[in-house]
Amino acid sequence: MNRQTNILEYLENIVHKCPDKTCYANELEQLSFKEVYDSARAVGTALAQMGLYKKPIVVFMRKHPKTIVAFLGVVYGGNYYVPIDEEMPSHRIEMIFERLQPEAIICDDSTRDAIRRFTYAGRVCDYDELAKTSPDEAILKQIADRAIDTDPVYVVFTSGSTGVPKGVVACHRSVIDYIENLSDILRIDENTIFGNQTPLYVDASLKEIYPTLKFGATAVIIPKELFMFPLKLVEFLNEKNINTICWVVPALTLISGLGVFDKVIPKTLHTIAFGSEVFPMKQFLLWKKTLPNARFINLYGPTEATGMSCYYEVDREFTEKDVIPIGKPFKNKEILLLDENNKEALKGEPGEICIRGTSLTMGYYRDFDKTGEVFVQNPLNDKYPELIYRTGDIGKYNEHGELVFLSRKDYQIKHMGHRIELGEIEMVMNRMDGIVNSCCIFDDERKKIILCYMGSPSKAEVVQYAKGKLPRYMIPNLVDKLDTMPLTNNGKINRLLLKKKYIRKKESD
Image: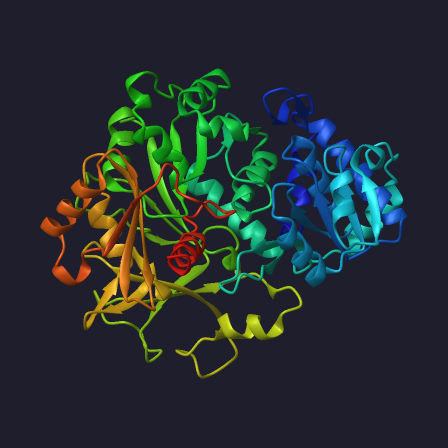
């Protein structure tokens, strides 16, 4: 049996089985597998004819099925794609371009003019023009024959703690391993209809892009504006017969927290995978009550380990005081829990979650120092070189032997002489009736805990609840009620933005 070495083999193997079936779609358009195949090969040929090979190619297009085809076309040309979105802040794109120094950008009619705002003097290619190129079989075969599974597929830029984006480089081998494992866990097949929520410029979109090709499934890109109107969002899921979603937790709590299930339920959904944040138990139980026969799967993993690394399928009853585990590692991955002395954490004790296996990405683009800080030698192995990735996340094993996420390493604070996990405060506050979600940040200068929350209770009611549920040293010193919770590009609560907002407010006092 031949071992797969290139993600394009998914498309090559499926296109002849279901050429006319819808592969990628949005609310208005759809592309068949044959159309995806032909256009991707055309784009790959065009790039190769320009002399571009093993180069970072920026795909700067609106969120659309054609954008995914552009990704595949870049890979057909023997290059690796770098997704950029027009909604990214201009200064962030400038920093990415400075780090990347791309030789070509693929744009569409909605982004062409925007490129002029940036310091970029390289080649600008229009997607529709590239897609008109006649595929050159000889060129494409030559590129495919030279490819190996450690060649890069993409570079995605994540938010760094210093505000400078980091470009994570993933190769074919790590993406293939991830897709094979994820497909088994989610039980994807040709009848799967994905409802895509995540932006295409984050690695979370891998969950829909490549399993769709592997099985001949269908992925529907959900209009972003629907996530501001949860009732219409659920109606869209029903209209498109979407049965599988892999969403960030805030997108799910938006629906359950605003009473949508009292009016309409997602009738066709049978698989709900979630991640990015701890699912507030009160909100999760609303989902479980509404869809008692659906499968709920908690996914955990950093971008640096290609997609997701751990999973837990909910298989027992939970109470509001419980936390959903992140479970166990994917096949061919191992989780190490290391204490502050780089030793294995004792049973039941917290430790930093570290990952080893072929799913590790190649590191950060043009940043060997930062790569060396977190992709390190396994301290438990003194016999031969073996890299692990230090996530900066703290976890522990529960009484069932399941891994539980506790907090970020940098969310641990010292307050009033006590070591505190800010996530523990959030977990308690999320149990309060009427609270949809909450976030704790810490003002280092004033030594004050700040709680921001979404929901119906007043600030006074929240403070009273906190006093009744938390020890004195964990009670927030300031409580703010928000209409919406700011999110990062990959759907996590934007704690840095909240902290900056508070600091600016403090300086203006």
